Image 1 (cartoon, helix red, strand yellow):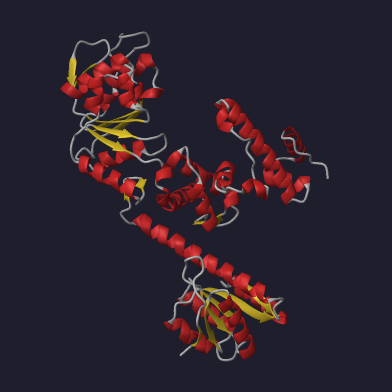
Image 2 (cartoon, one colour; image 1 turned 120 degrees about the vertical axis):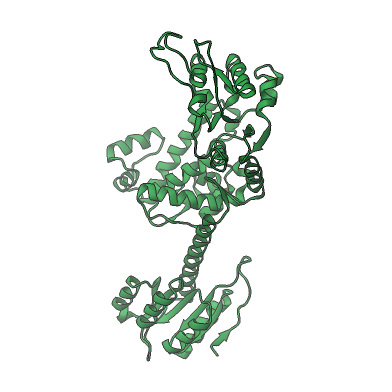
Length: 482
């Protein structure tokens, strides 16, 4: 049986770290074990490498604290076995000062870190082991998120397993096989077009075209032509006959985003197309039959638009056969780690960078931020983080400054970004200018503080030459004088 020391209890609701201490010196072995035990860890001890192999074969271990020089099986041999058979286990090497070169080789072979004996203090040992445990659990958390991404916690490109999203999937799957008109409601950035595409992909029309149009992006005088087509000479510039989007989507799906922005005449023609399955090209008297499933979307209150006379009531009811409301990201924060991992992988592949993990503190900040831009803003934040991340793990400092600052309530007291108070009392442009000024001031101060006032080093980190850095800092109200 392994020499076992029972744990004191749990840390912050998590199961205690399981640490194996391997050393042929009984006094050191026991003293290190007791220190780790006092910090709530579950500790097992082994007198040599051979005994450690027996424990590793039968016990789940997070971190192995291994002496380099031991009889029978030495530390390097034990490290090689662990990295080959149990790669998730982190290994910390303990070595006498004279063997530091060999310990460095061990780190290159996969060890997490090394400690030289005699230890400066026991805090050094505890800190190193805790960092190794943190890395182990971070890797486990990333692996779990990756596995969940491969499971059915998505509908098309929509991702999430929160109750609001499961309701969305249920409605979308229920209506997909029919040709019923669908109205998708939700704030900007919640995934309305992704929902429409997923419905199309699961429908009997999946082999035909999916045509998407943003109604608010088309000039008013061209909307009818875009939707229904025109004949040559119908208006100035109509040099050739052209089919519209309804014809392009024949036997498929037409997605009308921001449908509430359609002008009155286009609303009338859209209603006829929905009721009769017929359209007229601009400038033509001929009627054309079309077989199109329409999915509409809006981020405004169409019912209110009807009440004030901006949207036809009969068209509203024709579109609102089945309504699907997409929740804002702030109402599905449980999905944020899964979404963030998905966007991290996607952005990393696109940028050609091996950034694959999110630090626990980063995940906490992402879940605390209010995400006014919803899922689209989260994707942009992860793309930003991939660009500025220094290794394979996204830290809070890699996030866009407003996301990082908003996620830490007491950030101002710790020297972080301080936004002017009551920004909501200002007009948008003034509020934005004030926020930018606050960001620039905080940014240049942080760079100079990090570089101990070395302007050249701070400029390199900012990606600016020294003179441009000085000018930008001075405009931001930050002195670059030593």
